[in-house]
Length: 206
Ligand code: ADP
Ligand code: 5GP
Image (cartoon, rainbow, N blue to C red):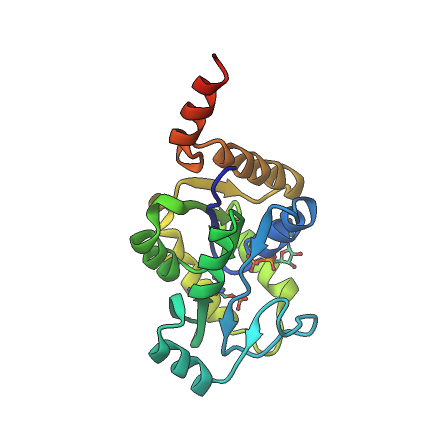
């Protein structure tokens, strides 16, 4: 039985992370576990509580911080976002591939705590202009567009910290690239129980 790992996506807001992840989750639902983040941001029109995020108050979020409930958390665009520690550990123990979409600050925290279990992917548009267009198309009243664009440039500076880079221009090509990463990572030697494999391999030789 292969061991699970964390497939972590970051990149500027509007780069297409949710779009790519929802395709992957649809195609590989039996193997994947999507970790639903907690946030204090208001839901967008089509978003559902418990599906896209757990939408909670600032007070509740701060209580969870104090209880040590988060694997990582960060303040992004003036709102808190965080990942449940228990959910992630339970899914890894069940040998699932845990999928996250988190910001660069959160990524740096996970890299420090669960490095061996981590495969990190940075997703961006081909340039800033394209990002502006996508954010304008998606804009909602709650979104602070200027701040998101400013943060986008800051986030790009973390690119070299990641294992893989996908430029999401043609969405079908970008999705193929994500699938290739997901499949190759399953074959990484650290995902196997090597002692067990050697034992079984030798046992069958007699
Ligand atoms: P993120 O999760 O990174 O914030 P989204 O997945 O919400 O980004 O995508 C932002 C917007 O861009 C959405 O309206 C989405 O439909 C659109 N989009 C995503 N990928 C592409 C692409 N390759 N080409 C054009 N538009 C795209
Ligand atoms: P959005 O408001 O567009 O859904 O997300 C804004 C940013 O927050 C994105 O960069 C997204 O990756 C990040 N984000 C979403 N969930 C989490 C989380 O649980 N932790 C951290 N650190 N960032 C998150």
